[in-house]
Image 1 (tube, one colour):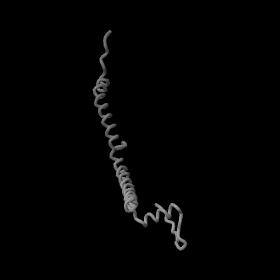
Image 2 (spheres, rainbow, N blue to C red; image 1 turned 90 degrees about the vertical axis):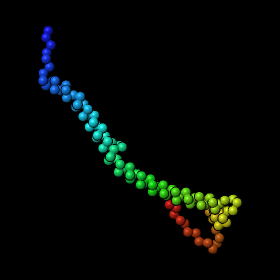
Image 3 (cartoon, rainbow, N blue to C red; image 1 turned 180 degrees about the vertical axis):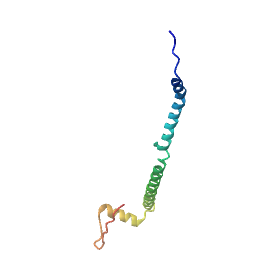
Image 4 (spheres, helix red, strand yellow; image 1 turned 60 degrees about the vertical axis):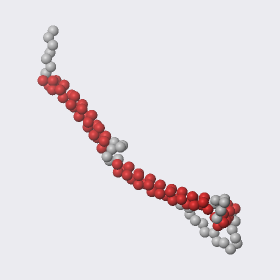
Amino acid sequence: MRARKPSAFRRTLRRAAVPAAVLAVMAFFGIYAVLGPNGVLAYGDYKRQLMKRERDYATLDQRRQALKNRVALLNPDHANPDMVDEMVRKELNVTHPDEVIVPLDPK
């Protein structure tokens, strides 16, 4: 039996298969680089998240500084009498008859 000679169309398809596969892989990675979770379009979202976390950090840092100050005022060696008085009154729920209590909304 005689082998059939491939047609010109089949030869062209075979020669174009490898470059077409390479182009498809390059297109995939190119699209992924733009639209993927770490792509160019996600950069703006990362910047927004960074700004939000920096604001959160600044708020927490202020809170930490306030707590650090209160701890320093409660040092057993030289405690601040006003701070001790404030804490005792708060814990025991004790006030003088002539005092007015103004509730503060903690934020």
